[in-house]
Length: 365
Image (cartoon, rainbow, N blue to C red; front, side, top):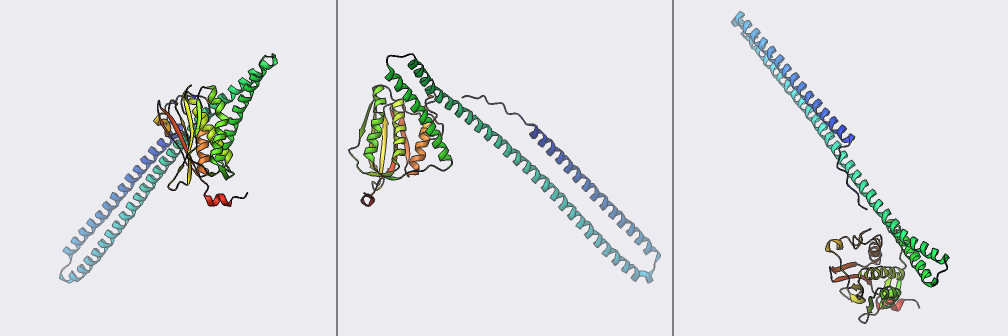
C-alpha cells in the first residue's frame, strides 16, 4: 500500500522550545552584562579611594617635618598593606564572579543540549511510530487481500454446489485448496508470534534426510504437473540421518519448492538435491534449483526479512514464508541462503546437522 509522505512541519512544541531557548540565551547575556557593569563600578570606587588616600598623604607630608618621618613611614606601610588587601579582595571577587558566570553559562549550555537531545529523541520516536503504523497498515492490507481471495473461492464454489452442478468433485477440490491456503496463512501468522515471543519449539529427532525430501516433493508434484513444470530429485550422492524437527523441515521445503513452482514458467524445471557439506562432511546441504526468472540483486539482501516479497508485482503471500524458514533453520542450527541470476533462475540452499554414526547407533530402537 503506498502512502504519500507529509512534508516536514515544525511542531508547536519545537517552536515553543526554540522560543524558550532564545529567551534563556537573552537572559543569560543580560546577566553577564550586569555583572560586568558591577565589576567596573567596584573597581572605579577602589581607585577613587586610593587616589583620595594619596592626596591625603601628600598633604600630610607637607605639614610634618623631620620629626614626623617615622610616623609617615608607618603610615605608608599601613597604606601599602591596605592596598594589597584591597587588591586581593578585588581579585578574589573577580574570580568568584567569573566562576559564577562560567557556571551559569555552562548550566545554560547543558540545558540547551539536553533540550536539543530530548527534541531529537522525540522526533526519532515519532518517525519510528509512523514507520511502524505504515508497516502495520501495509501488513493488514496484504493479509486482508490474501484471506479475501480464498474466501471468495469458497463462497463461489459453495454457491455452485447449491445450484446442483455436474462436477461436484472439482468444486470440492477448489474449496479444499482455498481452505488450505487460509490455514497456511493463519499458521504463518502464529509462527511469527511464536518467534517474536521466543516460544518457537522444535521436536528434535533423527530422520532420514532422503525420505524427508522425497515426501516433500511428492506432496507438491501435482502442483508442478498442473503448471507443466518438471519437479525431480537428485539424492544419489548422500545418505544419512539429520538431527531435526521433521515437520518444520518439511514446512521449509514446502515453502521453498512452492515458491519455485510459483515463479517458474511452464516447461521449466525444478530440482531438489542433497549433498554433504562442512569441513568434515558433518552437514547435509539441501538445494532447491529452478529455471525461473531469477531474483534482482537488491532483493537478495532483504529477501529473508519479514514481509519481503520476491517480486513487487506479486501479491500472492504476505512475505512471511522465507523469514519463517530462516528462523527455523537457524534454530536447528543451520544456515539458509540464495544464489540467483535474473533470467536464469534461483537456487535456495540450507544446511542441517548430520547425525554421527555414534549418535545413530545410540538411538533407541
